[in-house]
Image 1 (tube, rainbow, N blue to C red):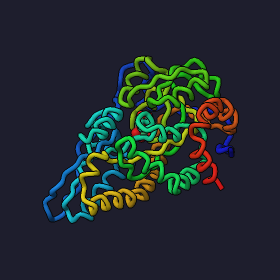
Image 2: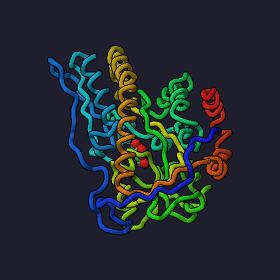
Image 3: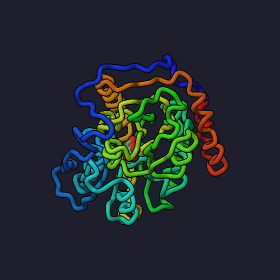
Image 4: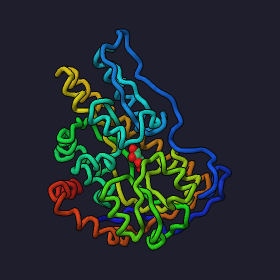
Length: 347
Ligand code: GTR
């Protein structure tokens, strides 16, 4: 695989901003639970069908902006007949609980990480494998391919209707303790999204994995229940994790796409016309979400740098890839076909 980081392996220490609080100290602000209910704008007609969409992120987060665009398009295409109310900020619950509700049909839609869905649909686990994509272009080439779409369609076996992938960038480790090299992660308690591949990945780095819901991570960092976590820039920013875990290393171990999905129970009840509307609207919302993602990612990075977080860039990703190779080896046979398709998307 290609090296992705071209800059030197230097730790850049910037002046700590006043928003920073230490691990184990009391909260300045917390979690991802700010925000309010937001709904698609109804057109002229009164809706005859109202459904709910759950997202863990705050209202201005790029996945939620994608959700809202999707809801707006569905409303337009159905001439106001269908209304989708978007509930950001985990208002309908933490992701795993929401996904269970979606499976049952109690919540119609959710936007969630494929890392969470992996626990419900084995095929989605492939995205939690480390370093399978070289960069954004490679990832999206695969997601947009026939094989990428096949994975979305395959969600029906787990009683979901996969509608679209959304962007989620690359994930990096961050900790309350200094991390400027791979060996610094040894012995650290690192929160991960709950799935078995993540647990193997953390073990391969000599650390211990602590799966827990996203909304619990902030207080767990503060109280020392965990030392570290990992995520992309926007989540590190909006969750306020950067105010507690002030050391980040840009190792880019995963690119875990988001998925917009519907309850199959609810989808099956729709008319053929409405099924088409929902699918088309979801696909049409993707480019908007990806554009918003890029803008937000840049803003988050700037904000975090200005807040004085210690950022270590990784010049050569090869030692990281070598360290986590046992995880790939363990799952290679299970995901052979899709890994081959991912490799093919590189060319
Ligand atoms: C974010 C993702 C969320 C959530 C979170 C986590 O990147 O957008 O849906 O899964 O990661 O780490 O739990």
